[in-house]
Length: 370
Image 1: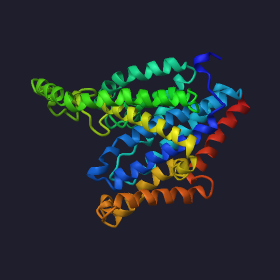
Image 2 (image 1 turned 180 degrees about the vertical axis):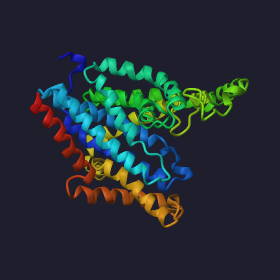
Image 3 (image 1 turned 90 degrees about the horizontal axis):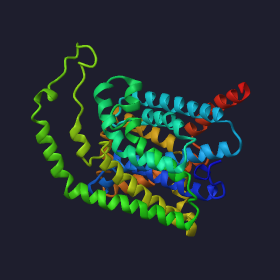
Image 4 (image 1 turned 90 degrees about the vertical axis):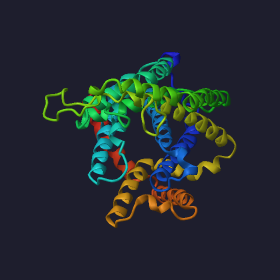
């Protein structure tokens, strides 16, 4: 196997604790964003999803490497990914039926797994280069998709705006490239932290001091074309019934806005956090254990927050009102950690158990047919 595509098996067990812990932090951040957002913790908005997607890309490479290094045929891996995507996609649509107050990204998450199948056999260098280019290519593509595919379920999940698979693809492929590295080595961790800082600092400075002026100039330029802002005729044939792409969104650093600047800032910060947690694991792994338990049941906890919000709305309660009390966000953190610990008492969460059983039916059947 090509040197640049080889997965390192020796440090897999060492990195899983840190990876689960970072994923747990992402889930906690989602709960804070949805139930306890305050001015002092506003940085979690949008960034927690970027952190979760980055971890998912790393896990994707680890899963592929583990199966392919054991001699598993690629068709079996594809069957497993297909099963996982179907399960996650179906779960996302069930959550959508609740009509809750938060955006559901499970459908886009499922599409990412399918889109990444084309990259599994690519080298680490190719993945890194693909990710770097896609940070600038995918945002305009997802805006075009938002214009053309609005209201079409599957196509919209693939490339229908800031919460589509196309919007998250740069972060996911960056995670896939990171998952190929020897993350147990201190030298690799330092490089990861340095790369994260090299991305985060200049892009954040640019978005604070320069980007607002560019955004205003672009909006002024777009205002010269009033026809593009006209409401389309809903009875016209496609694509005459679609809106013009919202090009100004490319020049915003807004939570879940899908711009290259937002994605780069979130990815740089996520790489810094991942590196710090990997260093912490080397010296104080016990500190990470509560967060790792939460990360192991991330899918269950992610889904439960929508059910909880739906229940509160049935009671005519605003889900964000939970954080109005003193230290409300801290209480949400503790409750989320407690929920993760309770779910891990039975080894794994119910959705994690269900998805593994569902996957097994697919790839075992594919193996028998092969």
